[in-house]
Length: 405
Image (cartoon, rainbow, N blue to C red):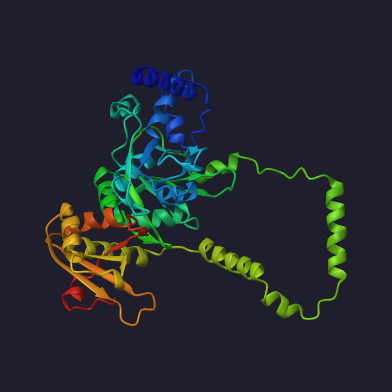
């Protein structure tokens, strides 16, 4: 009976992949295949872009799931079925990303992580086969995928940040034709493989604009995507609002404008929406004019070099509050972090006079490699319903017991 059900399900899924129109944004993928024979390749990409998420707490919503998995790449859709008898989901879902690199990152980072008080299972559907990757164009060893890019960062900004690791041939962010902004992810092609490897090691978890980069090597080969330049070929959608609607709207606006305002200055000052718009415009203006000078790039490079050579200490924030500290916390942290390398010391420090009972946890490893790996793996993970913030901490400050940096 189960075998028959499984076969029926496979047939349904195969038909779905064949009939569903493919909207692969990444031209790296679409341009790599022969246009006369895209059926199998499109289905393969669809499988590579899909992940399974299980053991989801029943009170969590699709929006909760999206917010946690979006940092790894642009999400095409989430299939979270609701049980009509209970009104709740069944504890699992499928997530379809636009790019296979995003799916690989999500599985690597999120499997076994704490989400809403449960350790979730993140993996692949039954029809996934790792050998499918071998049927697609071989990836460039000097190309990296980067996700969770702040919406205000441009391709030039991103290129400036990664240039300290080596010469960059091309930097492309994936455009959204609807919003005409990037989707928060893209690719960087370096001159050689060593530069790309160094960038992955050092920039995974690097925070800019309050968002931590998620970085890995690319999965699929082919030409680099065109990036934001592709929007130049897409016409801006024009408004089809009838003329009489505009005429009525103008009449209403004129009537409103004719009404005297007793205190227009205060009115503007107290309008939260206008204040919000002004702040957004100011921020956009700053971001549009943002450039990273050679001295700033050198500073970043030196900082990363110091971090790579000297820091064996990882700082964890937003893990517990002061009233949640118990005698077993240090041993639990030591045990959990030992999978990244030998832990030599754990310090739990309560921030003095913190209104939110903030706690900082310092984990010292015996090697910089172990610390770097722990930092990359722990940053952005969920523990007890909280999203962890991890970063490498200055070793000299740690040895001086200066935990307030």
